[in-house]
Length: 331
Image 1 (cartoon, rainbow, N blue to C red):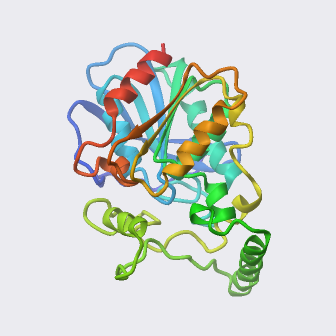
Image 2 (image 1 turned 90 degrees about the vertical axis):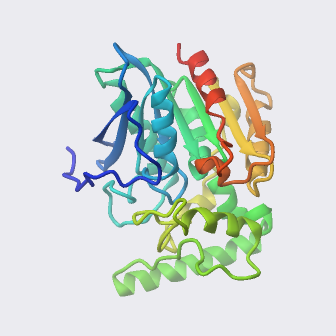
Image 3 (image 1 turned 30 degrees about the vertical axis):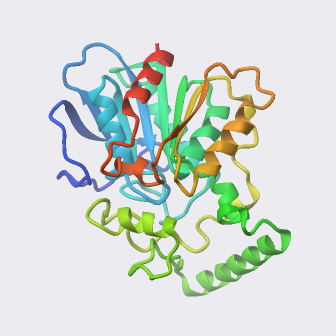
């Protein structure tokens, strides 16, 4: 049922390996038959069945970057964790490459829960997820859909539906602007079909223009430098296909967030260009929701977007808070 993936054997992460965890490569499949690749981290001193966490993101990154750092760190704190590459990216399967789908990518997270639920070291009643950047929005979508997940953390989240449909800071929120995007992408579909290949949209811009806005500089500082560059990362290299995110235009992924009953912690940097996504998502999630006692918005002082990828050199990721949150709700 699963494809035979070619997985890298050597340690090729953007962060150092910890001796406090056992690391291994694992694979699982989603209900579309796509085989997903993941890194599993297990605390070396752990015994018996463990609470488990699946981690994914940022959008356009790979498991060797931020998600792996989160997974290894949470494993050091007593959780069995996996960081996985979503369909069509990284070491995971799926053709054509470098496509995104609100449906399939939601399913990727649910498939991770399938895998963890049946793992002999996992307590299936104690499973959580962490979504970073664009996968933070996915995590909220999954939180409204998957009743098996007891606790969810979003970190420096993007709502990929909103940014695709309305542009950054909602600057393209008009029917005419969306129509123009649809025209351009449908024209690109014809070109792709004619050429037999999918045109890449380009990753983070490099070299950095002198007039680049701060959020572009922030991304460049992570994806295009030794700090976070990885050879398999879309953002570090050629990016998604031009038409790769087309379906997000018409499919709001947070439609039922105010029906989430399980615990949710939304974390964002105070100075991140993207902070409005988390503030608005939290407000929408708790509006008319009778289950608000287990919901929290944490704004981290002075932190920018990519500080929550790797700490930004100032330990910006609140791992103590995350450990407390998961220990409280995965019990």
